[in-house]
Amino acid sequence: MAEYERRTIDKNIELDIITGMITNSEYLKQIIPIFKEEYLTLPYSKKVASWALEYFKAYEKSPEKDIIGIFESKKAGIRDAAQIETIETFLDRLSSRFENQESYNCAYEVDKSVKFFKERAIDNLIDRLKVSKMSGNLDAAEAGISNFKQIAKDFSPAIDVWTDKEACVRAIRDTEKNDVLFSWPGEVGKFIRPIRRQEFAAVLAPSGRGKTWMLNEIALLSSFNKLNVVYFSFEMTEQQTLQRFYQRITGQLEPTHNEYDEGEEIGIPYFDANYETTKKIFFKKEHRNRLDLRSSLRQMNAVNRMVGSKSFKLICAPSGSMSVADLNTALDNLENLEDFIPDMVLIDYPDIMKAKGGTEKRHQIDEIWMGLRAISQARNCCVFAVSHTNKQTFDRDIKQGDYSEAAVKSNHLTLSISLNQNEQDMENSCVRLSIMKDRFAKFNPKHEIVVLQCLDVGQVFLDARRFYKEKSS
Image 1 (cartoon, rainbow, N blue to C red):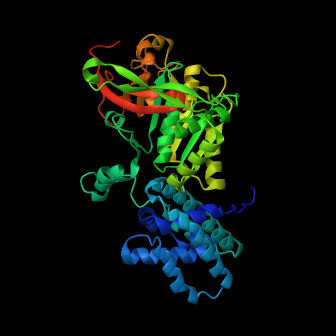
Image 2: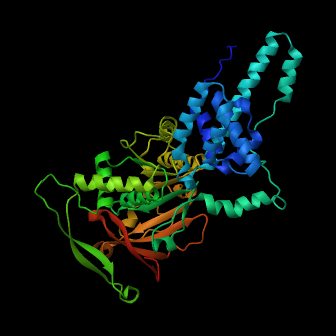
Image 3: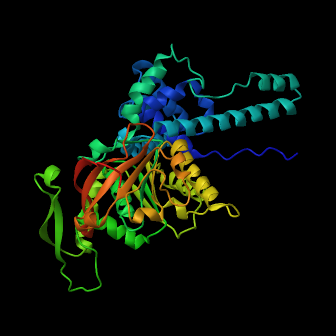
């Protein structure tokens, strides 16, 4: 049997643990019952952790910015000058973590920490067993095995439904407070409920109806709401995708190779004042310039100031080049190399991802969509995708079950939104949204909301009005 090799400790996870203990009270509360100082390997991290625990014991919350004052008061008692310098550097880098804590992915960080604690507890047990075995103290080795306690979260996998008041609070209050990621703008927000963590949602439409534009807008709304966003594009190039984002934030037209092209006049749709009765949509003419570098950079800087420390990542890959496992690896790399943990993962689009060979198409689709659902749950984020509907929907509105290639997609979704557009809608620069599935709220597929758009300049939600179908199309 091969000799056990001690696992290399991931210092980044250790730093994430200390950061969570300092900046997030809910995180600290959940890990206190399972935390032991011996799990940490960095001398300064043990010291800073002890300060956070001491503070929580006194005030029942994490120290946050008070950690600076705590360090100043404790510094005189630290003899190692190098350790003082290391702690100062760590606290300086920590300052950005105090911002935008509303989107801190507490559940994912707790799960990651529990896994780390389990690994460290097993490492420490093996070290003690090896020492006992080498010294001939087999009784001590057996006692160490018998006394080893399995690490788990503070709350038991089984709860008492009628007596567990903390579980009641989590179910009723915490979900509303911590799990909502963003709400839709204007009237659309009254029609479609807010998006939450651990959701797998999709926009459905036949080809050419603007699904990618809609996914782009969802990505931008998420970023504007100060969330960490990662967008995977398997259909469009990096240049094409970025140009659409820049059109959205500048309100400019798609660029051309003609340097003398000064833009053109376009029509911006708006509802008649009595739209509920007349159902009329009018246009006002506006001149818009072509997308240019100066405007793009200026608006990029403005958005960057608005979102603060949050990031919007774009990954473009050829069709069929990435599997769900590859996507997970990409997310791991972002976390390990860039300290980036996504709140929103957007995919354009899952049906052209790589799947295991040798199986039927519907089984491949099921494998991909089930894997994406698992990502939303394991990483405590929302996965949002787009998908085609079947060919019949080119000539009629989408119905429940109109998924292309495999109806099993619906089994994995928590929210499904259809995007309908007939010839009259195209002339009016509008689309009609309906909810085809919602696992957590009431819905009626016959209810719609009309959304005005001007995709010439990347505007997806100009205005919206709600109405009801008299009968199915």
